[in-house]
Length: 276
Ligand code: SIN
Image (cartoon, rainbow, N blue to C red; front, side):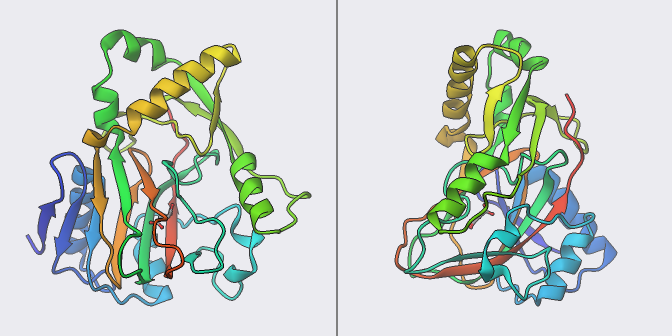
């Protein structure tokens, strides 16, 4: 094996040492792919990737995804549309991902993988938390699994992206954002394992049942998936890279470092249409 892979917790996350993501051989890439499926989230230190290298690494997994809200903000100007700028400083009034979510689950084909590199990190804070949704599914009782098995839920980008735009004073009144219905329990296309696929950022309701029943069920699931025993927590350094599997892991980017600067860029790989 080319690299050392050290788990952060038995549940989720591993740090890979010795890799240069800018120049991986086919065999090295295959080791990373397997470790990624095994650990759901991988972390790498000291990756001084250019924009081109960052995009090229993402493209080895599939076509890159373009974020539906990326053009809402001037700060993205000058970057390729496949790059999502992640930035917070003393003028920031909202940050990306400061709530449990999986990326852009409102898309009919939501992103499979996200790859984030941070160039500037705060002196302390700004960790990202990740949670294993296979484990969350497997921890449910059999009657609950049966009840959720055939259900779908609506994921709507509008409320989240409009709220951000309003806070930033950006007029998006003419814009439409993606909205899609996905299985509440989806099957990972590569591992064949079942995973809970709802999140408080995008999932507005479970389809075909009254709103009060949907609220109760989603309330239960949002509490369940946020239990600490499913999680790991990553402490960033300058030029750390994290890549996570949006099909089976949630993440939460902790904004506890205001007014310090935290800055980097993300590429995201287009995924499959989720299936039961
Ligand atoms: C995100 O992509 O949701 C943000 C992750 C982070 O800033 O750690």
